[in-house]
Length: 390
Picture 1 (cartoon, rainbow, N blue to C red):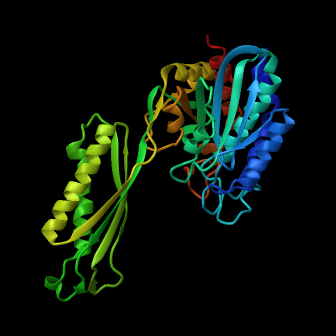
Picture 2: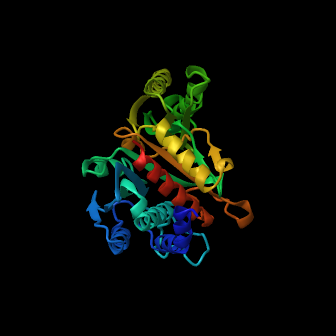
Picture 3: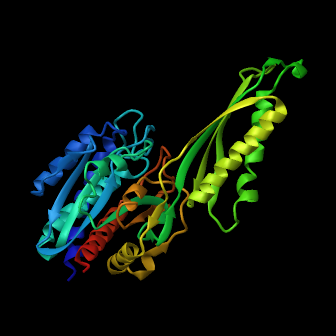
C-alpha cells in the first residue's frame, strides 16, 4: 500500500474540478483577487492559516509531525490577455482573459498537494510552505515581491512545476543544471529623413536602414557565439512607414535575446549595438537602442533534481523521466533559485489522441487533465523526500 499515491487518487477529481473553476474565471496579473480568495478559502478549510502576500498572492505552511527541513513549493496564478477558444464547458467567461499557459493547473496541483500532505501529516517530517505567486506573466514578475514579503524566510529548498504541452502526458520533464534561459528584450528606433518615393536621393531611408540591421543581426549568434553555447536572437517586430509612395523617416525593431551565461548575454548586446551603429552611420541615420534584461536563467540544483527524479520513479516509473533539453523560454522561478537550492520541472500534458496539440499561449490551448494527478503526486513526494533529508 502506498498511502501518498492513494491520497492523490482520492482527491484527483477535486483537483480537476479546481482546475476547471480557475480556467472558467481567469484573472490577469495584479488582478488575481477572486483567485486569491478561492485559494485562501480552500487552505483555510484544511485548517491551515493562509495569508496574503505580494498583494494578490498567498502563502501557507503545513507543519509535519516529525522534525525536518522546510520545503517551499510555488505555483503561479495569473492568466493571459487572450481570448479563450478551447471550446470546453469550462471555457473562460472573462472576455479577453484566458489560462492558456497552464497556471490554472499549477494552482490546482498545489492545492492538491496541500490537501494530500494535510492528510499525510502524521508521516511528514519538517514543514511544507505553499506559495501561490501572482504576476508571473508580466515582467518583472511576482517572484521578487514574494521574496521581499518573506516567502523564502527559513526555507531550505524550493520546488516548482509548469504544465508543458511538448512533453507527453504521463511523463515529467526534468534535468539538472541549465533548464530555462534568461529572456531579454531590445528595441531599436531608427531616425532618418523622409521624402517622396520618387526622390530617394533626398532622403535617409529609415526603412531600408532597419531592414539592413534586421538582416545583419541574424549573424550575431552564428558568427560571434561558440557553436556549443546556447543562445538565441530573434526579431519579432519591424515597423516603418504608412503608405506606398513615401519613404519613411523612422523605423522601429523589437526583438528578444535568450542566453544562459552573463558573458554571452553581454557580448550579444554589444554586437547588436555595434552593428546598429555602423549601419546607421553608413546610411546617415541616427538610432536609439534600449535593452531590458529579463529574469535570470533557471538552473536546477543537482540534489533537488535527484529528489524529483526519485519521486517520478516511485510515482510513475523510471521510464517516465523525460530528460529535456534546456528551454530558451524564461521563468521568474529563477529568482527563488538565486536564494535557495531547488528544481523546476515540466509536467507533460500533450496528448495527440485527445487533440491536446496546441502550444502554450494559443487560444485553443488545453491540457490532458490526467496530468494533474501525476504532477500533484510527484511534487508531493519530492517535497516529502527533501523535507526528511538530514
